[in-house]
Image (cartoon, rainbow, N blue to C red; front, side, top):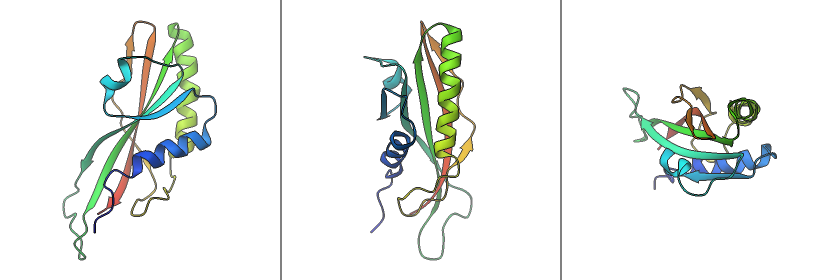
Length: 139
């Protein structure tokens, strides 16, 4: 039986909750529009599954595939531009400390590595600052 394909998401949320204390909300979201719409709390971190990448030759001998999963963590902060940059800068550093080279307890994952995130987004007095992580997954 194959493992839960998206098991890493709840593990990332748990890791961030364990490692970062100055955040009012840490939660899974489906996509960026889920982060930017509705009631918002500052500062918050949102974990979003982005996609799977299949390296060429990813089929292994035992029928398992090597998959590179991409997960995004978005820091959501409110304030003036100077306040947003200050809050987000430290929060992003804390996220990187918590996740880079972290080996999830979830079976079949390799340590998380940094990837190129999409651009930051500014809407009114809110800023959304993403970080992207790759995790090698075998399923």
